[in-house]
Structures are given as structure tokens and as C-alpha cells.
Amino acid sequence: MDAKLRKRHKIIWIVLAPVLMVLLIWVAKDLGFSQNSEIVKLETTSSTAMAKAENEKVSAVLLNNQERSILEIVVKSPLRSTSSVVFALTGTQERETLLGQLEGVGSYSFQVEEGVKGIIIKDPIKKQSILKLEF
Amino acid sequence: MGLDYKLVLWNKHKKTYDKLIALGMVVYLVLFVMLTLVFNPEGTAETMIIRAFGSLAILMLHIILIIGPLSRLNPSFLPLLYNRRHLGVSMFLAALIHGAFSIIQFHTLGNVNPIYSIFTSNMDYGSLTNFPFQVLGFLALLILFFMASTSHDFFLKNLSPSVWKGLHMMVYLAYALILLHVFLGAFQQETSMATTGILVIGFFLVAGLHIRAALKESKVDAFKGEIDANGWLKVCLVDEIDENRAKIFTVGRERVAIFKYDGKLSAIHNVCKHQGGPLGEGKIVDGCVTCPWHGYQYLPHNGQSPPPFTEKVATYELRLESGMVYVNPRGLDEGTEVEPVKC
Image 1: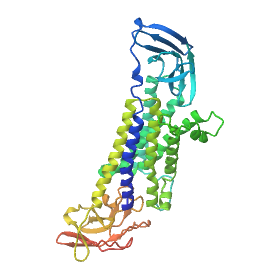
Image 2 (image 1 turned 135 degrees about the vertical axis):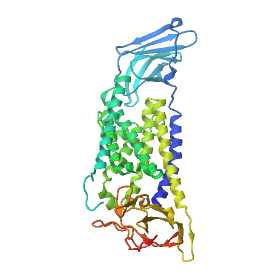
Image 3 (image 1 turned 90 degrees about the vertical axis):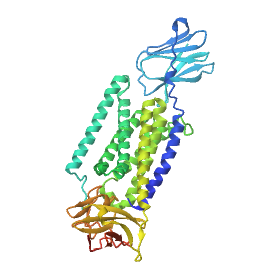
Image 4 (image 1 turned 60 degrees about the vertical axis):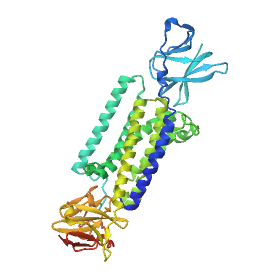
């Protein structure tokens, strides 16, 4: 490289490195690494099933014990979507509250507020609703 | 050397490196598919292809980006630099497959043009977590396409090495777009400490090596030698130059390589006419200064490529006094004959 290209190269990296670092930190702080670990250990023996809804692929049970409400979601067969994110539907307006991501067949538990009317699973990449269950 | 243009200038080493590139890509893809089938068997084939080729392209881009600074910090990496162009084109092909399958899967089922759909299907440009990250990937793919399609020596020759090299620095913009594409896209959907960590480490490696190499180059550029009464620059003792090798000095704003060979000293401009490779980091092979990047050759006493090739670099006059080498900072026209100094 000649002197001009060397200088351009140096300036590019001295600018790019901190700018990119700030941008990545800014984006990464909202990534929510703990989201999937929000799966709550539940003592089912002391919980009462308040509501239940299911179809051939997913079942959702709203459990309640004295301390909190737990929404237990069981994915029975693959959803065949690029990405599956579950939201709780609350209130008469069916406000959507993000619960977390479903990564495949299995059981998931989420602590929820009172007044959950159902769930909706969406594919955020395709911007499509995959399924909706109402209690 | 570029007397005429062939699609690919194969040689034994290039073929070996290309086989290694192909083998590495196949091994990665097979491993990716196997691990996906074990840990995420319910995924679709399209998703697997998109993820496999996307992650492969990012891995290859990181390797490509660290080859340059590694070669400047340690010459033993130079053989990788020699073969970097094919690695770049292979990386573009992997990125193209990722992009093509993504467009097919996400944008071809609507009633609008798929390319138009990339820019308009999600207009949430003000959002961080829901940013239309596919736009960033598409723009990066366009840059990579431009680079892959102009990677041939034909464009290098016609655009001039300086313009060509400057244009190909757009790969850094593509890298930034790709990192943001992944952080705003894949990581928002499937947040994983492991994959995020790997990419962050990759970024620090790439940025760290580039800055370190740039600082090393700055040190050479900052060389201020002693100037004698005739305006000649005192550079080093003749014993400091190894046989068939050179030492590089900054003379004015340019770098000059002083070669020692067959009991003689000659000085030429350090920048190769092909891609701006550092001639002084090469060595004398068959009586010719041989560029360490792509093997272009020049005669040390006149800076001319041996016939039938036509490349020429500037030459410099030297003087030797009491074992000390002096160089005339006023460079001569490219290809000017200079009597070598006996040492």
C-alpha cells in the first residue's frame, strides 16, 4: 500500500472500531440473555390450574399458587416456523405481553400477571401469527 | 504478471489452497447440519441452509479480514494473503446462497417484488429490537458482489491499483453492516451467549489486529533519518541488510526498499505496481525483486519487470561511506537505470 492508502486504512479502523463497538453494545444490552432462563421452577403440587386451552400442537395451562401465576406451555409437535415467540393476551383489548421464545418441542413456564386471557405465538421474522389459544 | 488475462491464474499452490478452501467449507457445512439435526431437529431444511451458509460466510469473512494485518505483523502468513482472493470469492458465494434462500423464504410469497419487499416489509427503521435487519444484509451482499465481480486482474489493471484497493476497502463497510445484520436480526430472535460471544471475540480480533498493524506501519512512516550536507538521507549500516533481502525506509512520504544482493546495493520504490504489495518484504529470486503478495518481479537496478512484462517502479540513488548507506530522497523516474553500489 502507498502512504495514502495506509493512512486511509488507519483512519478507517480507528473510526470503525469504537463506532462499531458502541453500536454493538447498544444493541446487545437489549438482547435479553436472561429471557430464556426466566423459565420458573414450579411446585405444581401446590398450584391450581385456573384455565386451560390446547390444540394439536400446543397446550397452555394457567396455574396459580398463593404467590404468583404461572403459564405453562407445552409444545407437543414442531411449529415449523423460523422463529416462535409467545405473548400473553391480557385484558379485554387482548394486550400482548412478551413472554419469551419457544425453541422447539418441550415444556415452558412463564411467570405472568393476573388476567391472562390466552396466548398468541408469532413468527417475528415473517411477521405472522402462528397460533392463538384463548382460555 | 498481467500480460494477458485468464479467468484464473492457476498454479500448484493455488490449486492446493483452493482445495483446502473447498474442503473446509464442506466440513463446516456437514458439521453444522449434523449438529442442527441433533440439537434442533424440528427446524426446516430452508432454515438450516440459511443458517449454515450465513454462519459460514461470517466465519470466512473474519478469516479474510485478519489475513491482511497478520501478514503485516508476521511475514509467515504471506502465503495466505497470496490466496485471499479466492477465499473472498468463495465467501461471497456462501453469502449469496444465504441471501438467496432468505429472500426466497421470506420475500417471494407476497405480491410485491422480493427486492422491494426487503426494504418495505418491515418499515420499523426507528426500532432497535425490530429494526429491518435484512436491509443491512442485502446492502452488505451488494458490496460483496461488487468486490467479487471486480476481483479479477482485468479490473485491477484498468482501475489502477490505488483506486481498486480503495474501492475494495468497502469490505470494512460490509463487515460493519453484517455485524449489525446479525446483532439486530438473528440475535434478537435467538439470543445465545455463546454465538454472541464468538462474534464479539471475532470483532475484537479483527479490529485489534488492524489497529495494531496500522500502528506498526505508522512507526515505519515516522522514521526521520539524518540528512547530510548534500541532502542525502543516512539510513543504516550495510551489515544491517541481509543478503537477498531489503530494509525499508520512509523517504519523504514514500517508502524505499534497499536491497543487498551479489555484493551490491540497489534501491527501488517499495510499492508493487500490481496491488501495492511491499516489495521490501519480498526477496531476490533469480536476480529479481519478488513481491511477497503475488510474485510480481522487478530488476533491482532499474525497477523494471523483466520482459515481456512492462511494470516499472521508481529507483533511487545510493551512496556507501564507511559502511553507512545513504539514499538520495529525490526518486528517479520509474524504470530509470541506476548503477548498483558495490559493498
